[in-house]
Length: 394
Image 1: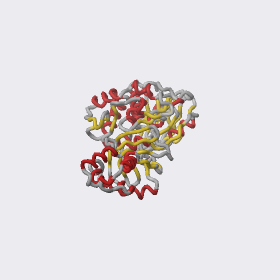
Image 2: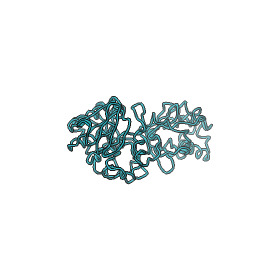
Image 3: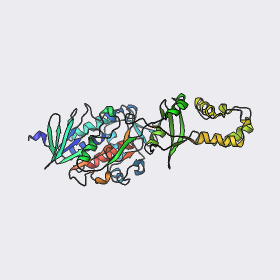
Image 4: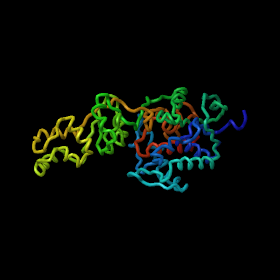
């Protein structure tokens, strides 16, 4: 077998984690081959954050991640921090800004982050092949990776294939297939950071609200977030809903407080004293978008001058707006999901090296494993941290 087909490490997947792992290993002097099935590398990076890439979050903590093995992420996150990636960004002269507390975005296009990673890969002598589909993987003395154009061997194989989200970027379940082929467990996958859809009856009730955004407190079970909620013609979206979707279980209701900064029952008592002839919809327009206030009042037959409202009416209205409960019909699926929840069981991996406990030389990093971050740069930081840590050992 020719020299050009033998490497120290083969990495399948040139997304955020794969590129990070590639240059880290390459700059250690390892001969690295990076294989990408799509024509271009880092496609999810390029489209993230509205094309600006929310590349990390300064407030990263283990509590911002979901996993069946919640302690697994602690080691990597502590060994490669947001400030470590920020040093890279500044080294490459990429301007950035803090859009929301902790959330760092590129001033320029997201492609600058991809370019950063490619420059570092080049400095590490990484061999990159795009449009290269992996057909088969096996292990004998070393790993044998057969593609549609050649066969490569290496003592180390890194699976950085990502999850099932954004299938238009080439996402597949191939990484899970490799895990199962080698006897590793896979936690059931489902869309996460994804809009929730209405049941058919609720489409008729609420589709007229499409396009409205409001700050709300949303909850399912014991988990709650307060942020923007966007009404769509299909259901509910916006940061608060996307965050909650990672915790939502099909069949569970969700509860929304549409007036989290106002006690409506107390406000009604005040309005009865100060503005008794004003209609409730007029007063609510000062706190909610007009279409939203009117629709909820119409649905519940509660619009009338506040002087006509009893104490019981006030309590009923408070429940309507502070405890709006709705049972989603489902999610909008992987096509709209930012990440995949579930994946390769982290109990099968070393939290220090990301190497399989069962198969020496086999590594899994990034979204393909069962670690899912919150919205706001947390998943990119996981990609950087897991890729870096594995790159130190392959």
